[in-house]
Image 1 (tube, rainbow, N blue to C red):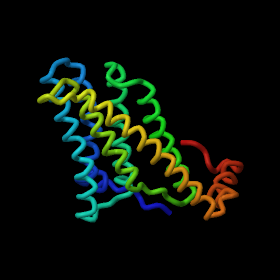
Image 2: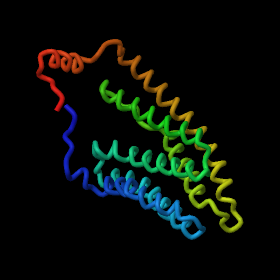
Image 3: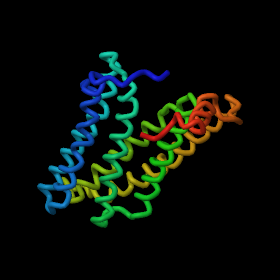
Length: 213
């Protein structure tokens, strides 16, 4: 039986930092649409702080031994929401090709769905260094694209596009790695039939005991 979700886990500092990333999205959207160097710097600063919370929450969770079930799901979801929302806005501003954003977002949805499926089968497909590198590259690319205007002789937009190309390659490669590990784990478990929990669930449905709430 999976561990219960506790209110104190939700309100722990690592999880609150993950929620900061989600909460920064509306503010970032406002700042991005305010054209000008000052506003782009403000958007970059807010995004940088939000990105740093990704490092801080994992470190704090391990340091304080507050690694919770909800934190394991909230942390990656917060990253995906932040990156996906920024890519959509950058496409709208014609700073990013739409197809690149589609590939990255679809990969994230596909891997999230696959990991949810793995959980129903009783196992996990943990992230690896490629997955962490993917997130770091995406964050760097988005940061540079948010800055957009030349900064101290640095063409942030062009560098942002180059980083996004690199992030795209790592994103696709790491996504394939997840599915390879998922398939390998299924074969190891001999997952050719539904687990007993699913069978019991189907029997309950036939008897009218398992009804949607």
